[in-house]
Length: 163
Image 1 (tube, one colour):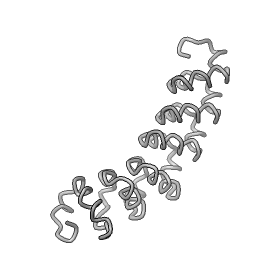
Image 2: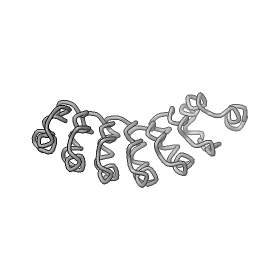
Image 3: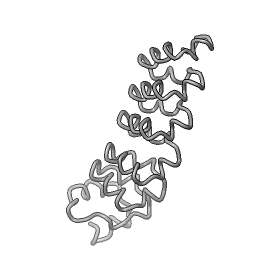
């Protein structure tokens, strides 16, 4: 689509075919098609980070963002601020991939329930938790705790209760 005419960039059939072959084609699509849910879903299913090129409205669409996150947890960085601050939605996202915690808002990266859910899915997600996060790991997550200590602050690593 890079060298296509404006008419072709606005043709839904052409753009759907293009994004099915390369999600990067969404970048060249018309603004109208960047706001078309069917087109954007096709793109994010290929590569989650294609969410970057979607309309602001679709960056706030839970279905679109979840599809993007399923493909690539890093795509959550392109979700709307509202979704990054929606605890219920962030819980669903970190259940898919704990590493997406990195793109939740500050409050949720310090939320015990959210951090624990992310760590249950992926212990490495602790490195994305807020600096306010401490002493929240229950004993039943000892395995995850040991792996997560790799990313804990020096203060937590020196705390006998935590270690």
